Figure 1: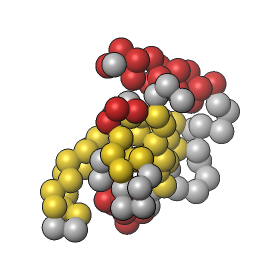
Figure 2: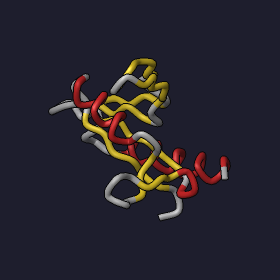
Figure 3: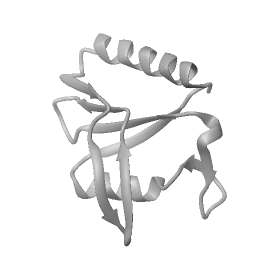
Length: 101
């Protein structure tokens, strides 16, 4: 599974490099080690992308088997609401990509 996730990351990297709207990007950034809702959140997003206009975007690449059910019964990465809240508070927008979809 790790190899498949890396393939998705490599494909995304090629898309970012070929996108003229992307000013800069960085893999495995930012590193989060903060408390959100009283629980420690340690996380590293797969990519940080600066499009030059608007907030930078954080992209998380996840394996389907690592998704969990949220309160509404939808699948998402573990603690996704905490990650999106942290991102918003720090001026980022974020999304996740599921490998194999």
